[in-house]
Image (tube, rainbow, N blue to C red; front, side, top):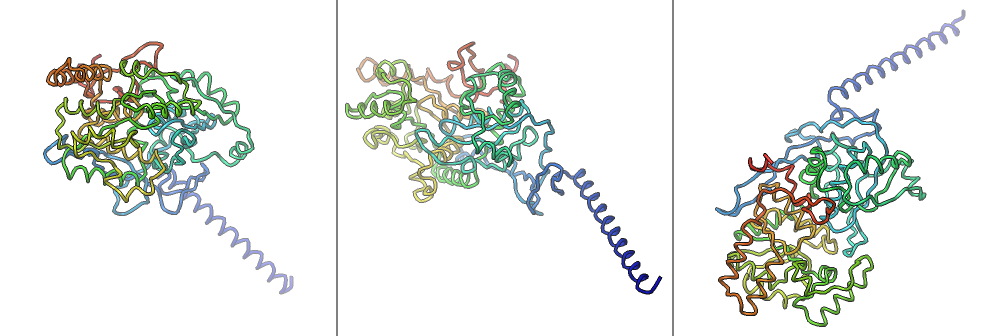
Length: 507
């Protein structure tokens, strides 16, 4: 072999040696990656096999101490501290713990949901749909919020809730994605999507027997209605507890909303105790309910026209007086002023109005502001801090929700979704005082006082006596078989998740 042949052979041998070295190094590196992934999960290695590549900063869960109950000096409940879990980049100064391990299960398909209604109706629906997805072993796509209701709020889920925290904190129960995988997303965009409303007040067997086969057949199912689609009662304990976990732990507002909420509470606390009055006396509520007591003839006509303008408001002909006497109308500002005085609410207390614009404005609020001069709203406490929240009713409602949880007393004037969900959340926080008004009795007493057949002393005594057992104390939900709309709402009193007194726990 000549010199040229020997040189070529040497070059080939060198290339082979280099290739072997590279291959050996690659094998060694991947072995290290696999071992690290097995030892530390997703904290130290990308989820190669799962097809999910995190960013350059490792995601961890950080324990954050957040004060949820902020008592006034010498007043109210003692300070309670809530331990929350937050997604954040790894930091040497952070008290970091590992992400909860993913629950491994065979994915039966993908569930898309479109929530309907206001913020708190959607909040309860999200809790229900997470629970349904968990027990059907499907992947949930981050819920779509209602943008077409009366409020026309364009907010997305991530504009109100901390979406990354929502996904991470529930990963040990159910897989949640921000959007469908590309192939399925393209199919949906082309119009290939099965969409349907589930049956209201269904138990989990309905979803297993009726909904799951559809998901398996079509791979993706869209539920276009989510309000009250899961029963209040007769569900396994683990289902009820998961609903609570989503509501009280996983659904956390965005940092921006939470910071504004804390600012409002700090301002209120500096001035002493405060009562949150959920005064449902907005134009849409009056038009929907047909309640016009105290309104002028022109206002009553305006409300009626509005009711007929919305075809999905099914009840059109309404007897306002009859409905009021049955306790089916929200209390007026004048009526609630009398109730607060009868309950001996201190006139120096701040009264925070958790509501939209009150119909009739200052004219209808005059009796309340005369009796309680310190009536405030978020708009007056943060006149320049809400500009980014204007025209976003759900984000404004989120602020009211936070302040309502922190108040010394919460008083809703109507049984709406916010009233019920806040009531249940305050029970969870230690049965904080929530006055559940007996509207039917109150309007009867108000009318007797106004026509002179009842003295103020007797009026006040009757209001007090009738509400001693309506302060949000521990109790069981009332169950009415085959009439779920008339029984107590799960989210108003999720007693399965609460620390009950011994006598209730034994029942």
